[in-house]
Amino acid sequence: MKRRNFNKVFTTSLTGLSVSPSIISSIKPEKKLGVALVGLGSYSTKALGPALLETKHCHLKAIVTGTPAKEKVWKKKYDLDENNIYNYQNFESISNNDEIDIVYIVLPNSMHKEYTIKALEAGKHVICEKPLALNANEARDMIKVSKKVKKELFVGYRLHYEPHHLQLIKICKNEEFGKLKIINAAFGFNMRSTGHWKLKKSYGGGALMDVGVYAIQAARYTSNEEPISISAKEYKTDLKRFKEVDETIVWEMVFPSGKVANCTTSFSSNLNYLHLAFERGFAKLNPAYGWGRVSGQMSRGELIFPQINQQAAQMDGICNYLNNQIPHNNVGGDEGLKDMIIIDKIIESIKKNGERIFI
Image (cartoon, rainbow, N blue to C red; front, side, top):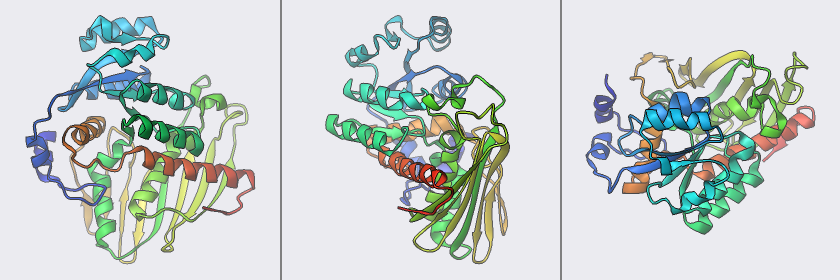
């Protein structure tokens, strides 16, 4: 099923508000919003850049990079104006560019706060890749600036627009198999590179900050609750490769209703699933979190939805909010802060040898 046809029939959202995509697609925004990508690494190159060729409510207008060779490639591929190519020395001058409405931060985690605040103070809305910051205090600072300058701050939660995940949320909300009892969520891969910034503590690396966020998110939006306690432990088998950052972390989150989430993240094991156990059945995704393919099953059969361009859906959803006040799928800065609070508590529990930490 093509994406345009799928949009006509899929009518759910994370917030629990039913907004028909056929109505959304009929609304003509005041203008197609201009996006500037800050950081042209793998995710921008392979996912966000190509997605911006598919988006209907925004398009790529500018880039920010510290690598001159990338400027030429992106300028040609995306037909960018010379005046819309920035580096990290002249980044603040983006405030003078009325063609740019949204700045998308795609930098190492340690740089999220600095460049998010710079972009907000330059008068631009910001989408920041997950995790929002290095810790909850940084996230609070970013949100504070967003409110002060009256510009929106979003987090790049693409799965909030992915149909399989939205359907699981609907199943949980409607209690189609009874009450949700147990959540098992895991995301990990074998980080073979030895020089990647994600293996450096100073950059905010580690499995938890990179892919563990997805497990936290899945547990939160399927349970529709915030955890009240967390217990976590870290395990290492390769002390050389993971000298500075975590290799594997397992943690348990308990929710007010009694739901329990068992989560795992790793930089040495391939993990990619979300399994929900209900009173009278189950629903699961495997693979669950990748932007290439998501597949699912439930007690009464398969979960069959078209594969969409998640990044395009995410950015169009945010632009529909900015242009037309159509509710976004819970991807604001406050959502990012909630994840950072949990990450802080996981790290605290690890330091205390798995002691249960109450929130």
